[in-house]
Structure formats: structure tokens, C-alpha cells
Amino acid sequence: MPDQTKALSTNELEARLQKAENIRERDGVVWKDRFERTATITEIRGMKDGTKVSVPGRVIALRWLGKLMFGRIYDINGEIQFSMSREELGEEQYKFFKANVDMGDFVGITGELYQTTAGELTVKVSKYEILAKALRPLPEKFHGLTDTETRYRQRYLDIIANEETRRTMLMRFRAIQFIREFLNKNGFTEVETPILKTVSSGAAAKPFVTHHNALDTDLFLRIAPELPLKECIAAGFDRVYEIAKNFRNEGMDPMHLQEFTMMEWYCAYWDYNDNIDFSWKFVQALIMELRGTLQIEYQGIKLDFSKYEKLDYTAKMSEIIGTDVLQFDDVEELKAVVVKRGLFSAEEIAGLKSLFAVIDYVFKNKIRKNIVQPTITFNYPTYTRPLARRNDTDSRRVDNFQLIAFGAELINAYSELVDPIEQRKSFNEQMANKAKGDEESVDLDEDFMLAMEHGMPPISGLGFGFERWMAMLADQPTLRDVILFPMMK
Image 1 (tube, rainbow, N blue to C red):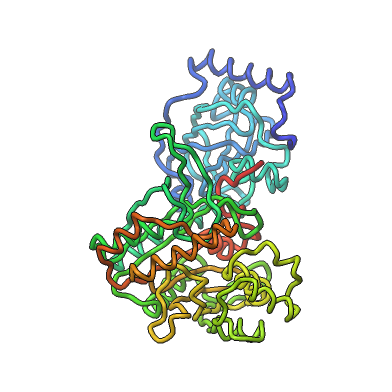
Image 2 (tube, helix red, strand yellow):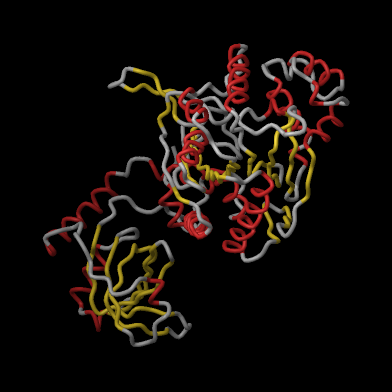
């Protein structure tokens, strides 16, 4: 474990505990219940010299110069300097603060604003209150804290210490607020769907399993909210969305997490072309809101979201494997072609149990990783999208698209399959794949099938990988860098 999480030395702990006792003897209470704040640090920065303010915050700097001291207090939106003089505050108050306040403590200060000779806005303290004693110190070099273990495991220290982390987290929550405002203004209704599910369905992924004691049954943490959201459309909602926590029991790497946020929307009477048009306006508006320009840089890669390229998935994959990718209905036959073509060895793809698993592996490793600029891929084989609408002129293809950039999938969307006969066939194919050992195949959801058999209108839906977007927009190298509390072993 890093130094910051080790037990405090006896002397250090005793010193802080003694200071807490000193505060208790003087004030009666060490950890106060409230403070009457007249302005936040952000608000203070817009005020004139001479304005009297009362503002609380965490002490992050102290510098004693005999009869004068300068310090800084912090909140999530910034920090402000304050000054105390023994002459103006009184010797007893001045000495008590010096003797008992440490870095990391919370204080409330009251005083007038003025500019120092260096031109920095400062609160000249006439009165203070010690609001909470920190028994553990901030890390010795907490400004610019770089230890990865500490940054992820003790995110609160990372946020205090690193302005970039603070900016990233604030950007994340600003993005969520923007998404809600944008969709609500465009006729969408935000809904909630269950996290605990009796079936693992809605996406190709291995689920987490838990046990419901009262019902004495195993349940799955949802891998996607897709099916209940489409049931909402069947109920008569015109446009719905959910900012949903999803759980997939898969490998962890810079672009994958087991617990992640997915925003999904579904629109009655749209097809996937309507979804392309609307989603592109949406992502451009989001980028402008957070970055102010459609030309951004991500980890040294210049990305231009003023336009997108288009790539026919079926045509490109057929070119890569040297034969029509739509013709296959046997996984071993497809594997043989992939090996013969020299794309991968038999050993590399031996564990892939379905047509989708094989073709997806080829796509991700031979095509997707090389896509840099925003690109819409479309026209996928039916066996890759069990919940998507078959193309009306060629049932071997589905009406779908993905938005890809910097080698990562950012959006997955399609015209939804609302034909209950075809949907049941597709579910049965998925169940056959699962029986062969493909743990990521979609389960048959009879409740969803019942809703579909009662009738669903034309629908187009979209999945928006929130953390990947935030990594790109905040220019962070991993998804762990854009969530408050990443999973740690």
C-alpha cells in the first residue's frame, strides 16, 4: 500500500488528537454542525475589494511570517488566499490558530477582500472558526499527487491535489447535465429500468451473477437496459432514454470496465438513418459544450468532429477475409477461411465459439484499431446483431451503424427488430451459441418476447459509451481516469 494509507505514527496521531482536545476545551465541539456561509469561493472571485465575506473550506496551505500569516482554503471549484495578522486578530486567537490548525483541517473565515501587492485577491481575516479537525495529514507532496494507487484508491486526495482530476470530474457531471437537458428539449423522457434481471440479455457480454435470498433465485446484474427500454416504447412512450449503470464480467483494460455508464435512447417511428442524423447533432453539441471546438486532441491524436467518414462493414470485412462475409452459417468454416487467409492462427481463434465472435475479433484487430477519425460503420451481417432489424431487401444484413474514433467504439445503434417471429429465431440461434460455449451470447427473454408479441412500432435505438466519450473529451488515457471511484483489487 502507498505511504498515505499506512497507519499514522504514534507521535503524529497523538499530536493531532491533542489539538482536537484543545479545540474541544475551547469550543466545546471539535467537528461543528454548520457554518453560515455568505459566498462560495467562486462567487468571491467576482466581488470588489472591501466586500465582507464568510467562507468555509479545507486548509491546503499555511505560511507563517512572524506576526503575519498567509494560507489558502479550497473547495471543489477552486481556492482562495486568506491572511491573518496578530495585531488585527488578537494575540490569543492568532496563537490558537497557529498552534492547532493543520493542513487538511476545515475552517470558516470571515473578513474583507483586498488585493495583495502581488495582485492576488485575499480575505483579510477578522474572525475564524475551526470546523473540523483532520486526524490524517494530506500527503506530503499532495500538490501534483502522482502515485497511481493513491490517486485511484483515495480519489478525494487526488481531487484536492490535482487540478486536472478536478477538471475532469466536473466535466463528467457537466456532461451528464447537458445530456439530460439536450434530450429533454428534444422530446425524450428519462426512465428507470431494473438493474437486477432474471435473464442476461440486451447485449453480447458475460454477466455478473448474484443471489436473491427472499426469492431463492439467482439473478444477473444488467449488461444493458435495452429490452425494458423497448418495452417502454411498446407502452406508448415516444422517445425514452436512461443513463444506466451496466455490469459486464469481462477483462479490464484502459478502454473497458466491469462497471460502467451507458446512455441509451429509443425512438418510435425512427430508423437508423434518423438516428445517424440526430446522434451526430447531439455529439457535436456535446463536444462544443465541453470543449468549445469540434477539432480536439486526444492523447496526441488530432480528431475532427466537424465531419465523419463512412465505412461499409460487410464490404470491408469481405475484402479482408477474401470472400463474402454474408455467406457463412458455420463457425468452423469461417475460422478455416480466417486461418487460410493468414489473418490469425488456429490457436489464436480456437476459443471463439460463434460466427459473431470470430468476425468481431477480426474486425476489432484488423480494422477498428486503425480507424482514427470519426467514422460511421454500417451494413453488418445479421449474425452480429441479434436484436437489430434485418434489411428489407437482404435479410442477411441488418440496418445499423457504429461511430468509431481513435480505434474505439463510441456509439452502437440500429433500427430495432420488432418482428416477434424473427426475434425468437434470433434468440434461439443465440441460445445454440451459448450451448456451444459462447458465454457472451444473448439469453432468450420471454417477458420481452411477450411484449413484442403484443406489438411494437418501428423503433431505432442507440447506446452511448459514456466513459469512452469522457476519456476523449477530457483527454485522459484510461476510463479509470474519468470515474470518481474506480474498482481496485
